[in-house]
Length: 511
Ligand SMILES: [Zn+2]
Image 1: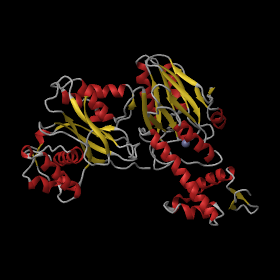
Image 2 (image 1 turned 120 degrees about the horizontal axis):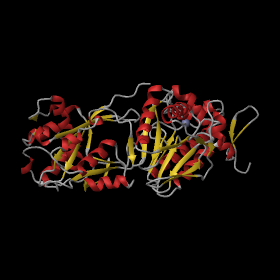
Image 3 (image 1 turned 90 degrees about the vertical axis):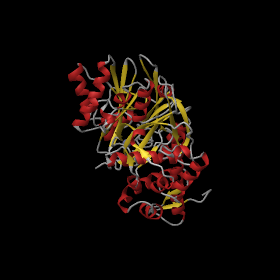
Image 4 (image 1 turned 30 degrees about the horizontal axis):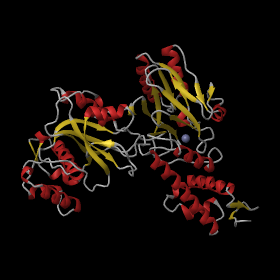
């Protein structure tokens, strides 16, 4: 399974005019919670490169590639927050800038035409390169993003344009933004976190050197992703169900202890990378406490034995494995589960900050499926019940649609959910929206399936042909499994039944 090639993108880290050198303010935006990709995340204005970005000539720039990316970042900044970083724009009135932005948005003028029309030009000296970050291969969309640091011109004030992708935007002191992340109040991707941390130390002479001091700022994909503090998302390559190619292992840690959740890779290089990450955390004096499993599927458990072998060799002892009893039973013969986790159990870490995970038995995708809810920060490790990439397969008899919907309802009823850490893909910041979307999607499918049965479809195959018109015939086998799961639920709900020929029919109320 190959992962997709990252697309070029540009972003601007915009500093406020005449900002405090020791406590600089930067303009950040909140992505709409309605967006499927990184909805609800804080970010910098930016976006994907367009063909015409290459046609803008950038002064003081001898590298056409860099020029095109400056053009891309400047255009995105103008489109999203109305700030025009072009020489010659000082004489434009606010009204003129607004009408230019309308022209660009409506397509009346292209970006190169617009600059030429008002005799404006971009100058590379206004855009300081601050790193190039590649989205790790676990995400549904991947970007190779060029970040540029720029000063906001004196007479321009950023504001969110009609752009439906963004919900809000504001100036914030980098130290405050970093503080919000430390308090688990916001979710950002690694380059944004790195920028906030770097800026929070002040606009010193070595600012850019600090920006560029880590390999991730030079296109080395990030392995250790901290969407929230104390939660490392460590995607490992697994033979999982496409389109996903990776399974997220989570390392939950504080000053003294570490929990490892779902080490799922069967591949040696990936197991080694995970072991090194754990070694780093342990080198700082922490104790690896336990391996927790969300559920039985191979892409979530295949690295357990290797991780424990590593711990035994390098740290003198392996650590206990904990899972639901149903998971433990299915794993018999592979490795032993040392402790059973029941619904409601709390796993409390010794050390600072306090971390208490409450286990929720949430079957549906798998019988012994567990989620782990952090009562203090509202983070929920959602396993394969909700994922950031791909869809969730409910495959009977291990899968059960009725249980699954009940599990989703239960998850949605949890107070102050701040993030869902799914088994695949990026963290989900818009937790309640995502859960509602999952529930409605399943209920809509259920209604279509019921209608198909009422209209005379009698077998899963016939139902798939009528209902799954949006799915390629290649996926019909999997769709049939999902239909069977829905039919089982409808049967349990008393809405359909099977006749002696193994054909489904709709029950009339009261029958
Ligand atoms: Zn699974």
